[in-house]
Image (cartoon, rainbow, N blue to C red; front, side, top):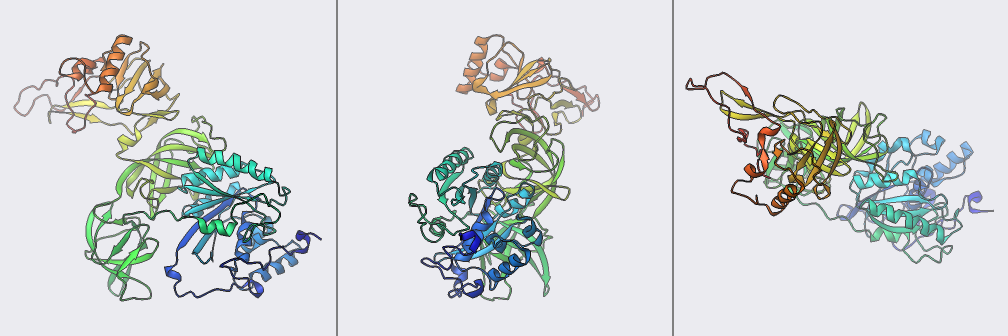
Length: 622
């Protein structure tokens, strides 16, 4: 009789250094817990393609380490007998009867176990395509990740999708558990095939791969002790590999997103989770957005602890403030010298999984930390298929399973950070109606104009304001620039050739010197967006990023201009703008306001190239 038929596994009751054998009924044998709060903690997510055995891996690990609650194994065995199903370790994790009946994981499950080194919070994330949205919430809290792959089936579509999502959610290192080695005949070749394929894929995503571990979860092989069935593997067991994982370094800088404000004993207690940094009674604080300064009066706890005076990363805390402000959920508390940005727009890397494609102009709900805010997509570019990493057509927007760079305009300013600076305030999810439709990380912050307007395709991005309207106010005596709604134009998009203060030929080039990029517009549509290093002048009219004509009439003049830009000098005379730029070629300044100025005299139009009263540089320089 084989292991599967008997329900007895070769590793039942077998332990290892630092592990307690399961007591009767699956109850754990635990050591002293008085110092539990002082122990190191690590949270990790386990994910993978449906039916590759990730829940079985976790169930087996909990069983072997004596981390199951009293009677859990007996209850699952009883349910298995009643339903006529064989005993499965995955059933130890399934929280819903619907999951047991279908054999799939629907929601994320969070469980704890411990070794002599530290405590673990292990997150079982769903693998089925329809349940990817639940995986976002599971993976977003993880400090490390393991991807489970069936050795007998190899790397499949969802394996690659999950790896890509992990990269977008900021999990920098991904270990791979090559499971079901028993079904692959304990083949080293099968193991190395998975390792070779996934190593390359993870490297292309910018993820650090490893460790790679061969396992059989159903039989408990290579969990707590080396497996005799795989003598060719000289690496660690799963338990040893977990303890060898290094915790990511803690982020510096206080970030406390406000979850709620409570009235208690006449006090207003601001509550939330300290995502990074530390705060203490007496600290000067900044509340964003709004940049309101105050001081932390007290740090509260439940039950009350009069000796508590501080809170650190990972702890939930309530604080009272020295000043009475109206505080709302979503605001972020920081130290004054290291605040988050108060941004009304941003750009991000996004993994899309909505029923309908993510499209320019569509409105969604952004959820970032504890904040929730309406947003509109102002541009989509750099679209790739997460399965193959190949570029995908952006004409229909981002479809389920695709990854892209996107620009967003928010209905109000939100406190956020670049993900590279602060993880918790730099990643988000997008909600379409009542459904989580996408998730991503913030890669750019700034004004809506800087972040969203311009051209993008094929990985190149050119900020440009060629469609801004210029006017001169006779009343205020200054040039005003009216900015259109922020937008990114991609390959194939039709552009406006004429407006109140500009008129361009059907075919022309835009050279965005500051972004070192160029745009080819042919017959009124964006033909190509490319790095400046790959651009050559082909005789078409050309403008800079503000729509000022470039005085280029030959390849030699273009080379001279490019050399002047590269060297940061005009190459001729004392005024580079006069040498190379022509405001009047494709632009004019419209007049607004009364005909007479303050002194009753007519006010002439300003000279070409007059500066903007807004104080922004209209790219009059190269």
